[in-house]
Picture (spheres, rainbow over the protein chains, first blue to last red):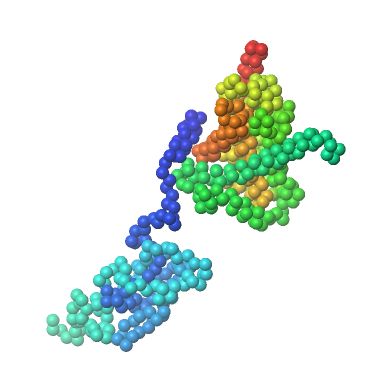
Length: 171
Length: 326
């Protein structure tokens, strides 16, 4: 019986506590840089697109919300002809970001993307691509990858040795 | 002479009618505002805000809720007992409002000055139980049914010593008239001389209006919504308003019976009445914020084995004192 009175008194003392609620639209909560929100496509330090249209994000996506169609330019580089993300399906799991070999696709701490029209939740490549490098400054996939593209042969990438000639026994 | 009635009688009747309607509206509006008051206060005590968007401090939330509930689909399940299902929510609203007829807000404001006011109030609040039981029964739903059964058992046990607790007050005042009871407290409030019966009435009143911690009939966690599981739209709204009317009613009765009603220094009587009643309304909300619901058998044994003997002992001692001093 006394414990009930004590409980009532303790709850009453909560009248003078600070409230935990963050009044959202007026007061934005701090979101850490690795918060998983709106998905963006980043660019190289040189300003070129990072995405190589490998479709790994699309495969990794558990809800199949990413649709990529590959294109290839005259130098042999791949790029996404179309890149669509259906954000009404996206569950912001971040698997696409983990799967991406070029750090092109990244999740950002922005979640304010409500729409009244469901069709507007489908973001095209132009909506997704940003001008910056996102969370990975200084990274350029073709500069470090061993793939031969126009203007860069095998063995010419950063930290890459000349390819071994497998037809000879000489060192 | 107007319509064959003496003019002053006619005017008096008209004034009484206006007063009744004003009291009716004031009470219903107070009950509706309580929805907002309760949500804000629960928020305060749970370290959050509660509704604070619609209008200043969210007070128009009530209006928004009302508009919403009026336009909701008023669905009657095909398996329900239709007439009873419709009547049930009206009963609780009616009996709660009828009880306000005898509440003396001040020495002059009040619908009717009944010489058996207390009995009338006990009878009316007991009739309100029918609403819950019939609602639970007519829904033909096992949760509603369980809620109704619980209400029946809870009310049977709590009605008994709710009346017994008030017997002490009646003996001290020597009347069932609520005006006389208030005026008998001019020197000393009943809460001092009748403290045990005040506590018992508080608990029993809480059980009577099935508020937390005695909200077993509607226990959301066990019975979804208990007796009003199948109700929607304005029928559900009537149950809700009936419940909040019950809070206002029990708070004003505690004020009248134990805290000297409108009596108080300096301020006018109605202000004192509102202050005291408001305090108990807040207390009921605090009770809901702080207490946990007892198990069903715990509630019953607490009522029959602890509160009933205390109430009886209180009656015996009070009557002995009254006889000895008179």
